[in-house]
Image (cartoon, rainbow, N blue to C red; front, side, top):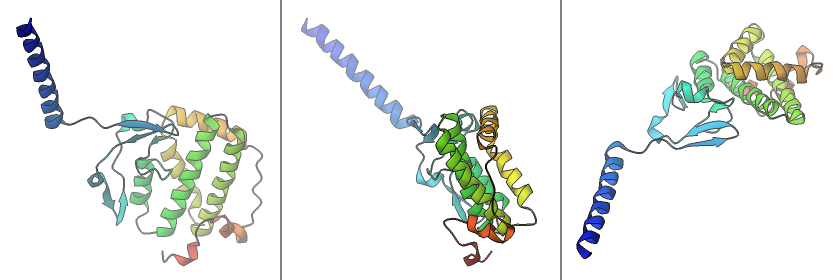
Length: 199
C-alpha cells in the first residue's frame, strides 16, 4: 500500500512540475476583465508606444476590441485605444485638436454606454457634454469642424452594435437645444483653454 501511495505522490509531483515548467516557458495568457463593459487586458509597460511624440496604448486586438460596445481601453482614460491612436496619428500637428477630440470621444463613448444601459438621464447629460465639445471644436477648427467630427464618429461607430446604439442615442437626444452663438463656442471648451496651447 505504501508503494502505491509513493507512486501516486510521485506522479502528482511530476504533473505539478510539468505545469509550472509549461507556464514558465510559454507564459500565462492576458487576464481580461470587464470595466463598464470595456475589455481591459493586462499589458506590460513596454507595450505602450510613441506616435508623433505622444505615448499611446498598444493597438488592440480587433476581435476583442469589437466584442463589446466600449471595446478596449487599457489606460482607462475613457477613450477606446484604437480611437486614441487614430486621433494622435491623424492630427499630429495640433495639440488643441487632439485635446478636444479626446474629450469628444470620451463623452460620446460615455453617452453610447449610458444609452445602451437604458440610463436615459445620464445619456442626456453626456449628450450635453458632447455638444459642448463639438462647440469647442468649432472654436478651434471652424473651417473643417464638420468633417473632423464626422471622421471621429465614424471611427467610434465601427461595429453594428455601436451604430445601432448611436441610432437610439439620436432618438434620446432629439430636440436637445444648441443655444450657443459662434462667439460663444469657446464656452464649450470645458476643462482646458485652447488659447493657451501653441498649436
